[in-house]
Length: 376
Image (cartoon, rainbow, N blue to C red):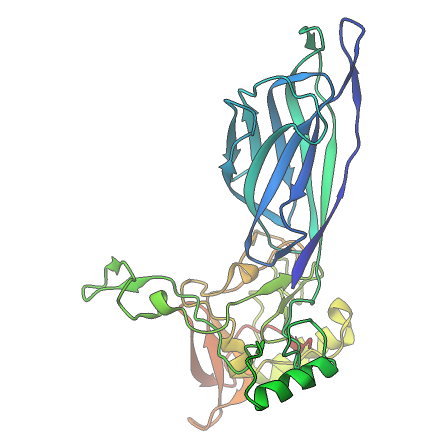
């Protein structure tokens, strides 16, 4: 799954006090790469470009559900310039810029490390700007320029079964590649990582006293991190798709609806009531929702988290009355699976998301429910 960014920009002009028309300094948000893998850091470049003007400082604001800002990793290219980032608010300040900035495309540059997390719109807007005209006089006002970036989901990064030559297609060249390998020719072969289990999500190592310790040389899970890396995408419709398992999960809310995390069901009611409503209402455009089996449900456990032990895609912005399209909630409690237990009699398997792990409970017990369907 990759995120593809489409950038739109409007240019403005300002009139200097000397009656000389100066090109307005405009921010341009670009990516160093054409696309950004989900959950990975990408370098976002903010440019301040202008005509015959000089820039002393500027403030920009990035906003949107799809972007989290991490840090300034490079200050403005102009000599003496500096970059400041408030990661909590994605507010960027470019200060002490050395004038003049005169060539469009060659202005002050700051690189911000960010992560695009879900489908949505990321916008950057220019705040206060200190400018100088061609005659050195200040140009009043700031440029009201806005730039938006659309984050759009795609499944082009998923391993393609049979694509052994790595060209993202299955053609006769794949058969020739296998034939060359079979006769001992040194041909590179790209093998998709099918058959592996998921990584646990645990990045911490512990010593004999249970204190956190550097992982190097311990052989613990936090050092090795074996398994397929987790990769989720928020579809923007109340669902999250796991790009590794191919499962689409119902997000949960705190609004008293059928999706509310606090609503509980007996094992029989989980299907007869909860899942039946998801299907009859064609939730998120689908009517093949079901109760997950115990292994599917365990795939959501993030062992590096607790209360709830889930990835942030299932525990974010969960506030009172929030809906599944704007938040994702997980109750730190047991969730029913569709898997009956061999013993004790009358029990089924559940997954407890307070600490993470499977257990059994009598089917008459009231537990939380999260729907799932097979997306691909």
